[in-house]
Length: 111
Image (cartoon, rainbow, N blue to C red; front, side, top):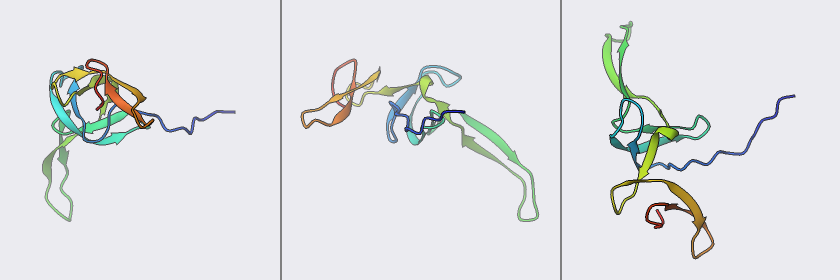
């Protein structure tokens, strides 16, 4: 019998974060996350991993060439800290109100 983990996986990257690519063809580029796919552990980032797709013509319209963004695995990304504009690792700890919140491991500030 196969076991399945129904618990949702937590990611260190959230929608709206500015991230830096640390691996792959886009290494060194930054962009904003506009969609997170937690089950696949991937995110979609504006301006990163752009590919060209050739669409065949149909009866409804002519063929065309479009450019779109593919997803990037979260292990290839680091969150850019808003204050220092440098990449940092992310941790979780309780804030003063007792809520679990993300913080920068480099500067110890909450994000």
